Length: 93
Image (tube, rainbow, N blue to C red; front, side, top):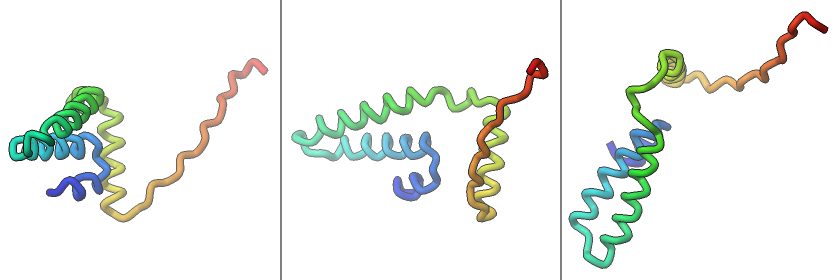
């Protein structure tokens, strides 16, 4: 899958991983004048990946929300706008 195809899925982690892999491959074949530029971008992508945290540490609620979002997306259902949350009444008005 190309980086463009990966990016089109909307999965930030997978897109960054695809970019990381491509930059690493390109760095091996790049002329010396370009290696520093690629290394800088590769380093920035690595930092972004590290900031995303461990992908296995996902709460059950987040996992279920992602699965639901993927199912709806595959079914062609557009994202529903979020309703604004209302302040709850405490009963001590």
